[in-house]
Length: 126
Ligand code: 9YT
Picture (cartoon, protein in one colour):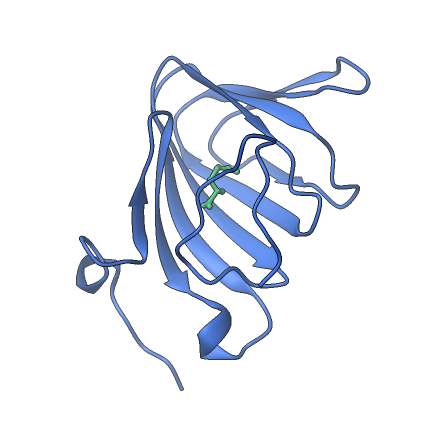
């Protein structure tokens, strides 16, 4: 059984801060449970291009307002508390935070917990 608190992970290698988002990785590959779980903040007024070509990501919004645009189709979906989106087609997308958004993110396969996006908006495998 694993029990931990987000506060214990702040300012560790599992707490990543970028220009447009910050993410605390609560559960990672080394935990061996088959997925990772992140507590992520999308900064207000930002746009991030993302393409998780190696991962499926599920994102559940618990605070804030924003939107996701699927680049292949131009479809825009609003995001508010209670919205779930799942990138089960590895969709390349733009994520926009109108206000600061807090998202709970699950990745399969799990991340190591230290990832930041590369130039394509991608995380490497393993
Ligand atoms: C929602 C989203 O994709 N944000 C970018 C950061 C990522 N989810 C992470 O590593 O927590």
